[in-house]
Image (cartoon, rainbow, N blue to C red; front, side):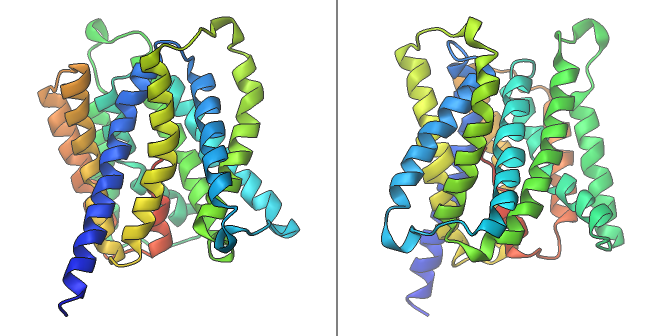
Length: 307
């Protein structure tokens, strides 16, 4: 018993560290836009992350080749969870605030649960259905802005983030099929590599907007690649080994809170009453919809990344 408590504390701290890093990614993306166009930022970020993960896969325990039968599944998961998700999110971030984005992304577990019920005929009890409906109301509250005060493209940004959530859900379903066949670092490496390969041609469409990176924008790109795409994932997996799925799911609800905080402190974004109410409603809906504890794989799939 005496050894378990420090172990659990370390696990909680690992999860918390991952969540803080992921929460700050929205601010890092905004700052990196100083010189990186949206798709180019994603392509460079995931290429650098692939190189780092590639080095880690050289370790004997991670040195695993993809089986031929799994290549289509892993490639498609990279397309959905890295390429399509990151492209949609990065484009949307041009038109919506970092705080709004982090609150909408908080609803992704609900999107995944809803699609899971439609595709795999998973039955939803009354509490889960209520949670889904409440989360949807929260997104509506968050995305509603009077026409005269709406920034250009703001509503489109919200829609793109929701579509990105659908892509993320399919990434979850595909990853589940192969998650137990490979070490997590090896699987992430292959997914990220495929994602970067698919994204590279799209980045060429932005070559007219390419500019030499500044010290700040370059450091933000490295932060996204090293910390958000590699270190946070490793910390998250470390915590998952000791904690229950329900504990981790509950902690994931801290991401929007941290995200709004960083947006306010670092970008000076205004925290309006609408954001507070909408965010609180989304978090309440997610908390209801993910109870009782879901399978560990689904919880792991809700981590962003990304994001």
